[in-house]
Amino acid sequence: DCKAYNDYREIINRKDIDAVCIATPDHWHAIQTVEAVNSGKDVYCEKPLTHNVHESVQVMKAVAKK
Image: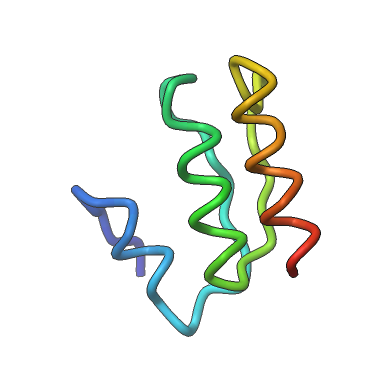
């Protein structure tokens, strides 16, 4: 069963999903990665993961807390 979503948070909040593949427009990558990691998901993200150092630090902090 393959379901479409309009809001990525619906997928991140699902308890039956362990990992996500982020293939959205670049400006969403860091935000979605941090939220997914904070929700306990494993993440595979297309390049670029982030656009700047600030976003990179936010991703690293989220992963370090996991």
